[in-house]
Image (cartoon, rainbow, N blue to C red):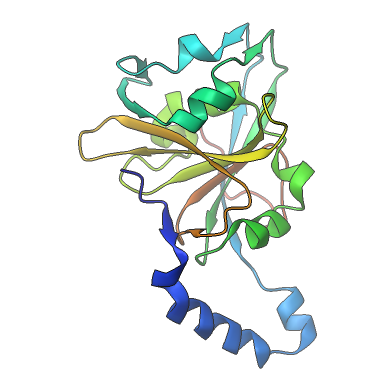
Length: 204
């Protein structure tokens, strides 16, 4: 079971409180409302050919942890991906300071195109690094936005480590009308965002 998101009805009181607080702020303060906190930058070496169906398998291992669950939407939209190679790059890791829906989170990340720059092979490699790659390895969620080559839509790929100690991996269409991402969720992007410079360098 994935715990990085919550159903909106359960968070109405929280959301109303935030909205009420923002309503009393001057416009300049609202525009500068900080939603993300920089955690790390993870340098990744150039990658060789990547086949999603080989990398993501129930019963297989990623970074020494067994893959326990893969959601059907992830299978439908991403298992056919083959990347012939990826250049050297960096993945930037942020934590949510507040519970947010996709619209607010995408705005904080600089828009849809900036947020969707992460590749599936980069997600796999930061997962393989575990905590050293910035991922939560407890029940809390990690996510990255990726555009599906199947339907052309933006999806939130998210991964967690459950009580069994293994990975659960799923994908949720964006924007989702009934789900929010909990505060503390780790967000992985290929470009720096409004949160500013990263605070640490991991995964070397």
